[in-house]
Length: 235
Image (cartoon, rainbow, N blue to C red):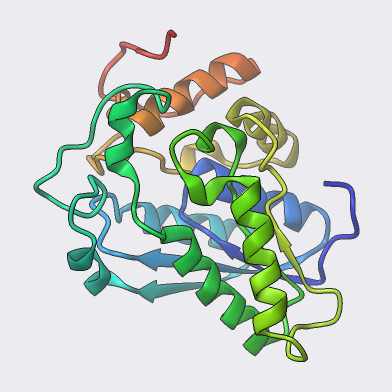
């Protein structure tokens, strides 16, 4: 995370804590940003409003790509199939496999790379971190390295000079990301994590459990409003 900052970066922005921190971290280093969000039929699409808030705070361009029809092709994922219940519990639990959206990061990264090529951006960034590795194969370093190679091969001669695919937090815990977010001034209250998409964070689904734990471990005050006071993050 110590290399030269890109001049202009396309950031895959869900409105969540991780991608918002990536955006703030890049802005703090002087990068111009385009925040790119996706409506893929997710039940928690209210996260897109939070991505818009983050873009507004940063004065960054924000685009939402409509992939809502994709949701009907992805039956079986709790994030896109209304017939599948979002499980409670920590990411390490086998039940969280139902939250996998097949090939999601590859789809989003492909579109982000295309946007970067078209706009002349010299980086694409996304917020994968070490806590995602166990459940989500498209958040692992091995996937990232292979996708970077495919990007270079498939866009040879069209990428901006020095183009990079960035996953600056891929080796960090979520608590580490919270600490970086604190340092660069992320408005945590304007980020959204909950997969259930209610009025407030449920506090017990996998992303809520991980979010609560991250603030606790980092020793940072959690401004999130949860519908339950039971943390449910102990292992």
